[in-house]
Every structure is written in structure tokens, then in C-alpha cells.
Length: 125
Image 1 (cartoon, rainbow, N blue to C red):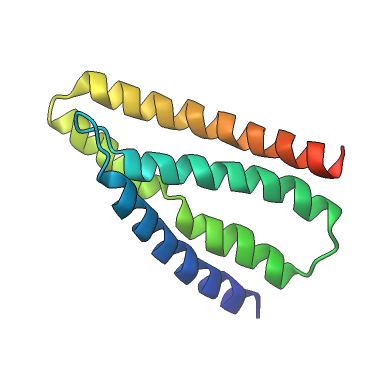
Image 2 (cartoon, rainbow, N blue to C red):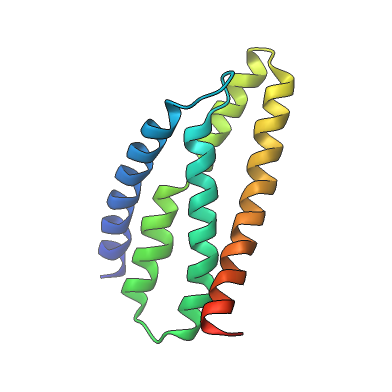
């Protein structure tokens, strides 16, 4: 039944991504795609928290895969990131593409590390 857990988590994550990205896209400044950028940062921070938390909690694979592969896998989306980055490049907006691509990669890595640190502070090493 793991596939059902992943599918249901994915459905919820996709809807949450769409909603949050739509709300945040209203705040786009100079064409920077804040919606998906913010979703990826939040999702990576949550993944960092889960990374630590799931090691410490004895939970079944169904819940583990619901949260990680399903919910957060569908919530964060580098496919949309890639498409937006590609569009910036083909539009000749190279500076914005560099800012968006580099900011997303470095920002998401930092957000994941922050999530790990917060979880470790909460639950200990």
C-alpha cells in the first residue's frame, strides 16, 4: 500500500504547491518567479526537518513515503523551476536567470540545512 500513500501525499502536495505558488506569484518583482522559488525553499526546509525527525521516530514506511516522496515530492518541483529558468534564458534575461537559478539552488540547500539544524535543536543530535 506504499504506492497509495505516495499517491495521496502527492495529490495533497500538488494542490498545496499550486495554491501557495499562485498566492505568492502576486508579489513578483521585476518578473522574478517568487511563487515556485518560495515553494522550493519551504519544501526543502520541511524536508530537512523530516530528514532528522524520521530518523528518530519509529514510523511505518507508509507514513514516511506519504510525507517525503508524496507530499513534499509533489510540493517542491524542480520541473517547474527548470521550465521557468529555461523561459528566462530563451527570453534573453540572463541576469534574472542566473539570479533565479543560483538563488534557488543555494537557497534550497541553505533552507534544507536550516531545517536540519532546527530539527536537531528540537530533538537533539
